[in-house]
Image (cartoon, rainbow, N blue to C red; front, side, top):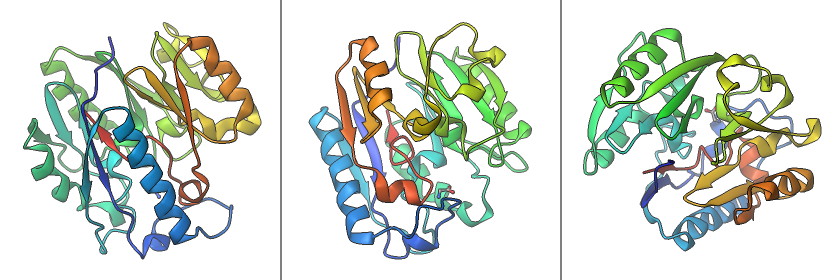
Length: 255
Ligand code: GLY
């Protein structure tokens, strides 16, 4: 069973968003359009029945609207991360009191680092990507906390892409949507797999909210493949957010 979400935390992108980290070669993002896409995202979450908690931009942290990286929230606990990029360390301090209203919070401690974008939640099983942002020490701390609440966990090495969830996401019904280079990874053996076309890798960042799939607009073959799951599919234009190495999952914390 996948957790049902009733709340989402989001943060407005700041005017200095362009100082955020990006490896994309898609050109500069337009702030007004990025804000519109962010607003459309919020409206979509609301239309799915979620109560949306909108936080103000944090000028000191241009990547802070990628709130997912600051916590891993389960039905029992909110694990506040220690983000792997130095320029993002401190974002998590602002999220702790917000989540503390809903969950007991526990912190990942240095030298452990974890970005929430590296953590797939598939029911009570968690797959933690070891990446440039999430290290082994951080994964072990997180796994230890998750185990205390009856969850299981494993790790997988992220050789390409920013986060694990840049390439692999749980789309319900024991199924992973994933890029070809992850298709044969052992930790994914027990799942059905929908493998993305090479040219549609960005659509790997598809987000399951309760029974609906939110997927980035314009990835026709992925949409056709997702239809085999017989779930409502909703597309959102992510062009400007993609330019900042962001995706549908990174823009919110769902619980
Ligand atoms: N721009 C998102 C990140 O690098 O964390």
